Image (tube, rainbow, N blue to C red; front, top):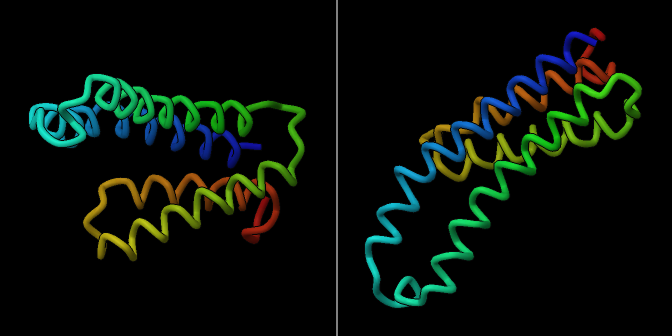
Length: 120
């Protein structure tokens, strides 16, 4: 059970980093361009909303992990997904994406909690 809480905490931290760092490092510079697709107000609103909705989805995954009577198979599936996304981020960015350790760690913790990582 503790591993699910570890996973939930890592997912929540990831969401906070994603929201804050993404706003500062990616969204603000993109929105400042005001040319091409970024000149369209609707596109600008969609980009910002989608970015932060992704963080909300991360927190919703954390709620699933922390839910006491949640299905271990669902938790294992989410853990596998988070690990896969973390490893993809590691490989695709050649280790430069700040989120890959958090994503991978949340996934590994969930898999361990589900009994798929060796010790539950």
